[in-house]
Image 1 (cartoon, rainbow, N blue to C red):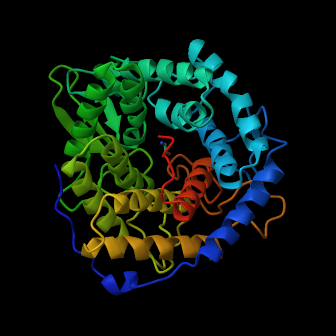
Image 2 (spheres, helix red, strand yellow):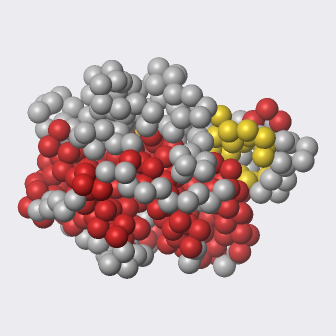
Length: 395
Ligand code: GLY
């Protein structure tokens, strides 16, 4: 359903708050120091999805959903500093993406946008890389091979047509911009149509009446009818996993950048209000929004950074006189201020990442209270958006 927008329960928590440009520039300077520290380790190799004791290890670009975040960080560093060395390294990584998609290495899943938009689409947009464009279009073809006409959604995981895996997950809202983009560059409307159908199906089933979200939703393989919402990485089926909620904030706004969709804006406002109503004292969520101050649970800073990017994108499409506009502006400033003051790695000299205290998957015991590379990516994107509101998206 398209949920109603919940009232902000504590508007005084989002009262006027200034985040001075000097502080954002300081944060960028700290981030660049860490990126420079990490660069020799991750020139041809890639950071692991999560750190171990706040240090990423080296991985090949042959599996998973996370390699694109590092290349994306390099593109932000290049645009923000103008230093060609980041562009050189990012471009040097593009052949590994083309090789990966041409040889179908670790691509039997839906995360084509996370992997290929921030690396290869960005390479095409910023450096005219034809290799990047080719890899990204092949990735889009791989993504639509998972589209189920029966139910009108993209299957997230497992082998296509395996009835036990007949489900979507809310995270995929960040993968479908690759399809909208592919229609733009190829003129073939099928990518856009499938993305738009998937968007509508996802918000139709994943949003609950109170504007919290299901992480995943199953469909009947015979009829295509929605069956049930369950969690994978959240605390329980009916809870709001913090990062799923954050994907439900930023995802609709990415669709909004390609489509004049009132529904996308309505979903964004509803999911972000729920999120803001469930932030603890320091504005950085625990890994599931069912937890609050006093619960002995780890945080997920990556969810905070993702939600900030969604709010910054939304503000570009809103009337400045709308009451929610100033809520988002102050929420962004307060969340970013808290991340900068309390969650940076600057006092952890051995750390080769940016943002402490993220959680990948608590129920699975993976990356708990560690850094994760998408937290670092969205934090960089947020800094970039704050410093240059006209930043042209890689998505
Ligand atoms: N897309 C996987 C995650 O957010 O953990």
